[in-house]
Each structure stands twice: as C-alpha cells, then as structure tokens.
Image (cartoon, rainbow, N blue to C red; front, side, top):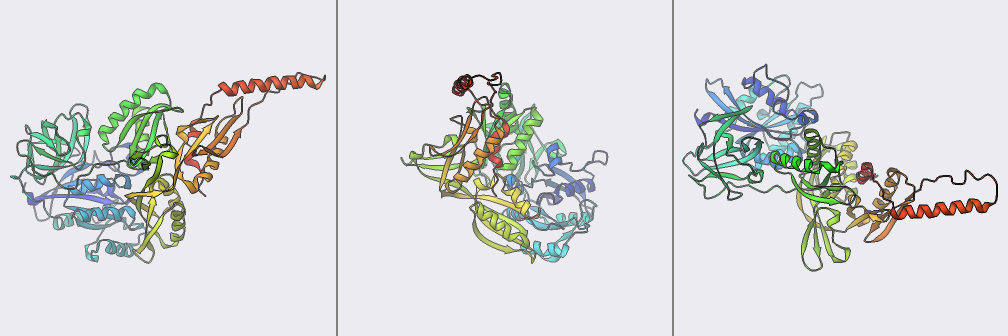
Length: 600
C-alpha cells in the first residue's frame, strides 16, 4: 500500500450531534463490519456509553475504501470522546491525525464543545471538513447553521457537506472530501523512531497495550521500546492495526496507526501524549505537546460495607489500568471509615468512575462532597495544596488561599442571556465578553471559580435555557479568594465528611441551610442531638434534633405531683448519661446534604 493512499482522521462534535452514528455509516459503507455483526454505536463498547449516549473512551479503527479513481485507500478513524472532561484525550487523538470531520447538528447548531474541539483541531494544524448532520429533521435550520460554521472556522459555503448519518445521506460526499482534502501523512521511515501514544488499554495476559501513531521510523517485533516519560524499556512482542479487533502485522511504519504489545504490567509507565521510541534507533527529541493530566475535582470513595475495602482497592487498581487519568490514595474518615481519596478530570468523570465501580465490581459506595484543589500560602512562607477540608491548616497559620479559576464558554440562544449572566454573577463569575454566531445565538465568556461550578451549575444552566445552552471550560489560573473552612459538628464532634470550603460571604447561608437539612435527615435518638455549623471555631448556626421521649408517668393515676417529678428527674439523668456515651449513625442521605443545598 502506497503511503499516498493513507488517510488519518478524527470525527469531532458536541455530545449527541451524531458522531457515533456517522462512524457506523462509514464502517458499513467500507464493509469493515458485516451486516450480521453490525449494531448501533458499534465503537461504543461500554453499556454505560450506550445508555448515556456519550463516548467515554476513544476507539481507533482501520477501514479499506475503494475510491472512484479505482484506487484503494486505507482510512484510519480515531474516534474521540465528546465531553469537556475528556478534552485532553481529544487533543491527543487529534495530534495523531492530519484531518478532522467537524460534525454539527442541523437543529442545535454550533455548541460549546463544537467550538472547543474546532480550536483544538486548528491548534494541531488539521484540515477541517465541516459537516451539517441530521439535515432530514423537520426542525433543521441549515442556512442558520451554515452561517454559524462559517463564522467559527472561516470556511466558504461550498466546503460544507450536508448529511444525515442515520439515513446515509451525504456519506459519499464525506468519503470524497476525506480523499481529496485531507493530506497523506509524511513519510520518514529512515528517521529515528518516534510514535505518539494517544491512548491505551489493558489485557490480563498481554499487559498494557499502548495505541500509537507512528510519525518517524518503524516499529517491529523484537525491537526494544523506550518511553519519553520514564527510563523503563520493554521488548516489543507484537505490533498491529485496529479492525474492530486487534490484527497483528509485521511492522508499523511512519504514518501508520496501530498498537504495540510489550508485556508492560505497570499502567503508570504508559501516559497519553508521551513519545515511544526504540533502543535500536532512538530519537534525540520527543514529539511536542506532551503534558501530564492533572485532576481537577477530588472526592472520597468509601465502601458501605467495611469488609469491601480490599475489593475497592483492587477495583480502583484495575480501573486505573483502563483510565490513566484516575488518581487515588488511601484515606480514613471518622464518619465513614477506610476509603480512598480520588482525583478526577471533572464531575462527569467522577460519575462515570463511580458507576463503573458499582456495575463492574458489584460494590456499594458512599461518595463524599466533591472538592477542588486549593493553594494555601502559610505565614511561614511555604505553599501547600489542599484538596479536602480536613487538610486545611488552622486559621492562624494561613496567610491567603488561592482557588482555581476556569475560563468558561457558554453558547445559548439570545433569549436566555440575561438569566445565564445572572447565574454566573451569583457564582462569583467575572464577565469577559459576548460574541454572536448568528442573530439568534450568542457565545458568552466568563471567568468562574471551579469550586462554584462543580455542583449544580450545569444543571441550572440547562434549566434556565430549557436545555439549549451548552458549556465548555478550561483551567486558567489560581486566584486569591476570601475562603473559609465551614465545619459541621454533630453531637459536639466535627464530621469531616460534611465539612466544606466556601466563600466567606456565603458561609453563614450555607451553615444555616446545612443545619436545617441535616435536622430533617438525621433520625431522632433517645437523647437530644445538637447540630452546629462552625467557622474558624466560632459557632454561626445551630439546630437540635429533639429526643424521643417515653411517657414514664403513664402508670401514675392520681397521687401527689412529687411522684411524677421524681420519675421525670430519673428520666432526665438517664438521657444525660446516654448523651455522654451515645453515638450518632449518620445516614448516607445526610452525607449528601452538602450537594442538596438550594442556591436560590
């Protein structure tokens, strides 16, 4: 196969714009998958991906296409996730390509992730082929969406392809554009070997299998693989391509997309974005663009049954082999026992990990309040990073606290701009600017504290805009903020699982709201339970769960009042004794109360 007949491309789109459906039609048209084996969203291998309608892991696949010029072409499709939490994975996949199909829903138009992914493609110098999908819908606004795409990437009307992936409309035009517009990869077979690792998977028998795009040199069985991220080396036992399943081949040459097997048992040795080279023909410099993925959101995961702790540890280790962005360390909580502090790329990533742990490993978990990482400058000049309220130093030791700020981009119809701006102001956002893609759709930029948007910001945004608004964000910087640690004391004891770090202006309202919520959720005991909110060791809110009382005077019929008083005093002493030794069982609903505080 001549390298001029090779094309490497991705499909990029916002969630639910038809990316997986278009991939299905391309596989059908090239007969890569037989009609007997074909099913909807065939590249989405997890049940969770099918249920939620999102791509969580990227899936490369090779297709052989016979073009009208009687030439056979090899097309490498590198599928990408569609959610903001997995944007780094998208950027690595795009770095392995020469072109990208930019898919836009004819009814929804350009949305936040469309813009983000388009800019990622432009940053990687890719050829972008704009496609308007779902043109057969009655609600399709083709002319309006064309205007939005031309405003976004600066293309002309004739370059935009009209298609319906569901009905197979425009598929031939898409193939023609892939062949005619996307360039073939550069050939550097004799250069020092450099291959970009854009993803990986784990096999129980063969170890970690990195997915690579070879830019220079060749990779063959028997060579020794080396990595830019560390000094370890491994003998390559197999290389191959992806055709739904992994198909072994003799070698991978420059321009090829494939996999490498080398009995690599430690997933930490394979990092997306790192460069793979060989001992036989080492590269002096790695490929540019590598950066280590850094968690943005932290939460504690605890087994409901304490006996499941070891099973949870094994489950997290196995999951990390399939998801390199997951981080976890052991943690102990007085309220919840033994568990793990986990770092995630975002709130959706956290939900996905928790659901996979519960489904795939049959675990029942309690998740603590999500937190972001704060930089704390101490009075002695040192700087520490804090990702849980329990780690926050004493108030007198702190000089200042810096919180992570994100640059947020919201795309919504003009009718909802006022409500959205009001929501952003309530979340301590700083307005930047507004751009208009069309007379009906606007793009709003805000700088927002990450700690304010990880709870329910996205849900509120969708509610305010009736589902039309879309959100994308990326980390910008750490900024000084007036933050305080809010402690919740139950029965005089601080409960670390309920502590939160919040803005000083919001602390009193949150403290009162939390105490009121906990009063509803904590069951009544045989003794009085006091719930308090404390800010810097000063009580700012208090409520009480009244004790259950037994009518000890029911047996007294008549007689002197002193008989009843004697029984009441005896009961009072018993309650006091119970209060001293009693312990409160806090239900899971109470631990999640922090997430349920109404911001209205």
